[in-house]
Amino acid sequence: MKYEAISNSLFIKNRKKFMAAMKPKSLAVFNSNDIFTTGADTSLPFHQHRNIFYLSGVDQEESILVLFPEAQNKAHRELLFVKETNDHIAIWEGEKLNKVRATEVSGIASIHWLSDFDRLFRELMAEVQTVYLDTNEHYRQAVEMETREDRFIKKTKAKYPAHQWERSYPILEQLRGVKEAEEIDLIQKACAITNQGFRRILGFVKPGVMEYEIEAEFSHEFLRNRSRGFAYTPIIASGHNACVLHYIENNKSCKDGDMLLLDVGAEYANYSSDMTRTIPVNGKFTARQKAVYQAVQRVKDEATKLLVPGTMWDAYHLEVGKMMTAELLGLGLLDKADVQNESADWPAYKKYFMHGTSHHMGLDTHDYGALKTPMQSNMVYTVEPGIYIPAENLGIRLEDDVVIQDKGEPFNLMADIPVDVEEIEDLMNR
Image 1 (cartoon, rainbow, N blue to C red):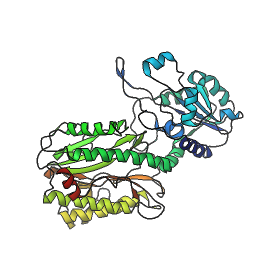
Image 2: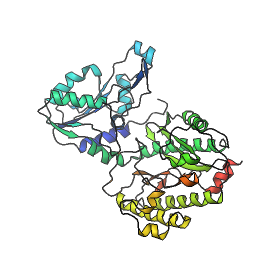
Image 3: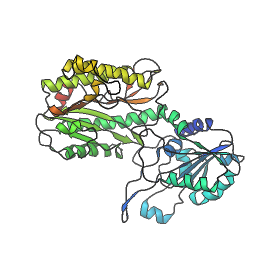
Image 4: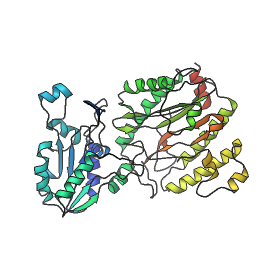
């Protein structure tokens, strides 16, 4: 892995929290992701399933974690199965986890080769009544393929039909939504790498540069700082492209007088950062661009102040909607009649700001986290208002990643990333 080693104390804590929430006489199973092929003998780079990583730190394919806190044999209370390595694999694929190294990474004493799984699992199933399965229930999930976890669930339910089944997701939604200090440090590292990438391109962007050239500059800076690369597919959107919320082609020329929206974030140790900045291609804001930009910035700053313990998700977004409505009235994009006649289901401001303001951040860019209970300290959220005016070929979004604190305003993990108009113009014109 490119990233520096993470203390296994983080994963030990995470497992203890998960096991404390399990029902009596139960075990939980977590599988690694597949390696996905693209045809013939080519495969995509491996990305570990976030849940097994969260609980073990193991960042390797064909791994299985079993948690069984009441196992009669104490050695069976935490079990990690990894693919058996040998000299042939080391030559062709590189170093894989051996049993000693797997313990160092995870803090789990009982390491077994994957070939032992079926035999040991059958023995454990004789002791339990309930099995926790790792289903994907994220509110944004849209997975159509059958995963390694899906195949395991199908096989296990068919082989052990008399057992009871529980879902790991409700537990993990609560746990992963509230970060440990070590996790916040890793997200901060990802944000710091993103900062370096943004500062790099501020001196690079000029009229005529291609969007994909800017993407390449970010990629270069991310990789040279131990990141695997982008935490998500980057959006490098100039001019009208910035009004397409999920524009990812990044293949147009940046024109003099246009604004350039950059929604990018570095990954570090499987943790995401998520930044958006919008800059003038020629290094100088027009009066109109500045007015819209600063309206978005004011909403971002005020919305951030609302992210405190006890805030409810739905109420937060209603308040942000009021802030945006006021700014759009000030810009002349809405009038009082628009607001008076608006629909409760689609308020007037949604014409120019049609997406949500915040989402949980962490191992996934849109991370696990409760949305129907009050916000808690050590939750990490994005704050990302925007105004999109297709008729003016102008789209502006600003986004930071912040940590909710016990008291006071959230801690901005992106406080060092330039955002003020004057600083951006200064850095672009040096």
